[in-house]
Image (tube, rainbow, N blue to C red; front, side, top):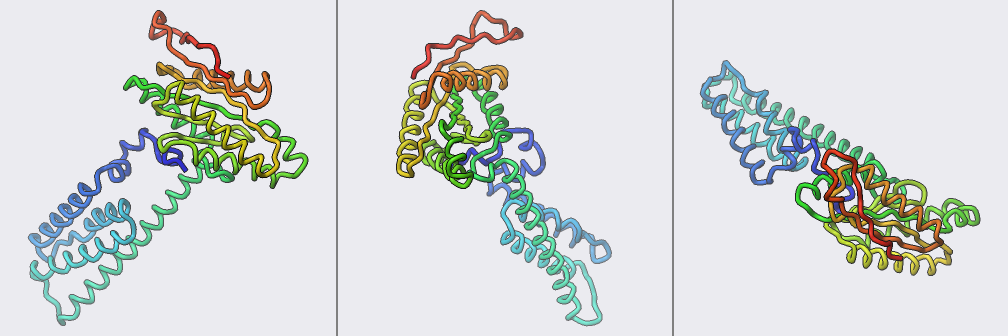
Length: 314
């Protein structure tokens, strides 16, 4: 699958504590964890055995586990336990038997390991749930919700940097007949075949989604009209090859818009692409309509958008 399909976009999540932990360079996180652990050890040692700083070790331990996984959590748990034990020794802690220090150290290590294990399990489960919330369960592509979120983010980015982007909606002609004649399992196979073609044809930054039923969406950052036309023609050809090999009488119709300027409203951009798909479906089967869009320079920034669309390519 294209990486962008399921990766989080540049949103408010990057400004949370989790976003900073996951978004920071790995070496900075390692250095931060080591420095904080060392500072806690120094405070634990200098304050003596009467005052415990043990609870603060869970901070760097949690960061290491959340960012790098269970193995890093285990390593951090061992380091934290050793630091705690050393702080007790240097802080003048006394015991009735020398083995008590090792027993306490083992208990602390076990507590840290349990914490790391539970935190890693929680992180895996949250990641899985986030992925499921963004993914179409049948095809593995992005679902409609995630596609619209990524599209909104990409439109905002293209507006900031003046980049071109393209949007395309695709619909399968004859899909209903496959379902009626051969049943839903065969229809699901058609959808999965389309998803496979999308995954093998699109570039890494592109995002493919199943929007519902037999309709698919494609977001293509920094893609102009010529690139868009070439990609859709190649995609259509590969899908026709796949369907003919299986004996399916299914073709692809599509509407696509190359936005030379960034539209101010996401719903407006979606409406343009959706309307073009509707025109293609009305005109016949297997048609791909492509237009370019540029904002009217005479329209004030606060006014409604006006767009200039070229003649569609078929």
